Image (tube, rainbow, N blue to C red; front, side, top):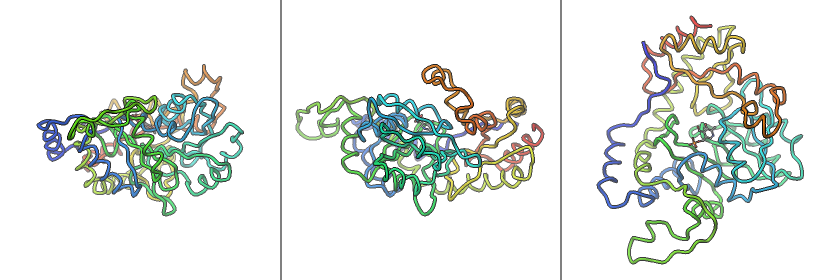
Length: 371
Ligand SMILES: Cc1ncc(COP(=O)(O)O)c(C=O)c1O
């Protein structure tokens, strides 16, 4: 049997929606992108959404709009995808890693205060795998030190913790619509925020710093535009937005299925002594199903699973150990020992709504046979 690591859920109605755009006059950022932004705000409950070309662009622009730049330090986790930290670097600031909790893999909020210096400007929590960081405690620390909070919500559209949803307590929430995400258009992203000023700045920065986007320049009489700031070419276009719009109606149905698959996995894996399953706090968005095995056997288990046709991934090896970060900042593995160990233990298993029951059984059987 072959069980892919991921299969997307683009349907005929999503494709029809794209075809409508292709048959229209407007291909780039226009009315469909605006419609998606409004609908996305309806889902997140956050007042403003600015759609961009990737989650990385969302993080980069959120940093810039919140005034983060050269000389600043930004606290984040080494247990994440590299884009969390590279977007800090692209803004000209320096990432400062804080180790993670041993049972969840999430940024350890109790260790954040010790890393705050006079240069700290912001904190970037990552809602890893779909479980939210303790935002109530983190917001409290940020407020006491006058820091911004930019949430990396690439894994967490549907989550909730302590009655708080992603973006509710942060200054900006950054989403990814990358190929394997819960909501996907191949490549895409968005910043969502309740702060109108931040949204306005990001709207300008995502399109070269121009005062008008294509839709407002060409719907009606031509209007002159100005360049207000040095911006980037990070806008979403209507073709990608068209792929996303109808998916939003199905997001909770898809979440239910991933939740049910995760619980089925949990039933077996939580009783196996060779495996640890990351602890879930509150409602997880169930983006990834990750198991932790002993570091000595991890690569061997990865190989055995693939030999049996089971697609796997590693989300993630701790990023402070990657060559660029080691060479640029002089990190050694022991600097963040918990992230280091988790990164050497991690295996992500297939988790998506199209996974059939017999495939779930096969993944479980394959893990049992491989550990
Ligand atoms: C935690 C995290 N942050 C940021 C990103 C960057 O998103 P994108 O690939 O859309 O640029 C990803 C995407 O893989 C991610 O998983």
